[in-house]
Image 1 (spheres, rainbow, N blue to C red):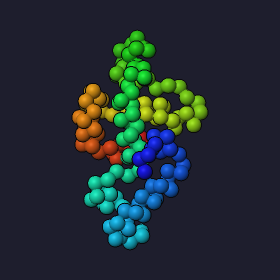
Image 2: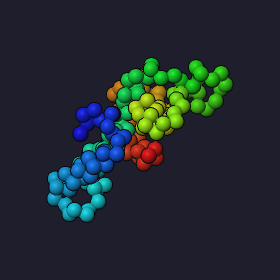
Image 3: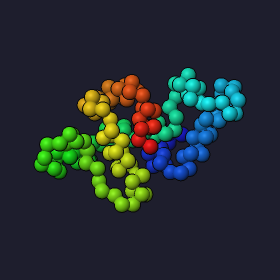
Image 4: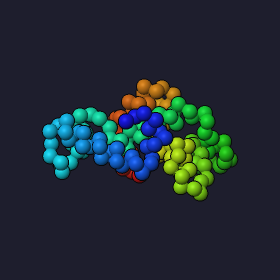
Length: 141
């Protein structure tokens, strides 16, 4: 399911795969068809598809931070968002669903203490899980 998730994770077909993921979880746990998967996902300790997509976006952006401009290099004014990555202008919804645009949007919504730990990949991953990446998914999408 994680194979090239960055490229197909925002497509409309990802809903079908998410439904399959929930169906497999219900089969594994021996539950009824209509039972909620939220508790089962927490019990198994796995990430839902949308959360895996956000997590892979954040890891990609953290590894390739040098490819993106910071607001302080573009604007001369000191603002609260000067340490955020610059959000590129986009009119096409296809571009807005892409890695660069959506990745910057998600990364800028992270708390500052998680962004600061971006230099150490292990600490960055740990702080994302402590912050519960799945909560970020509900706030962004």
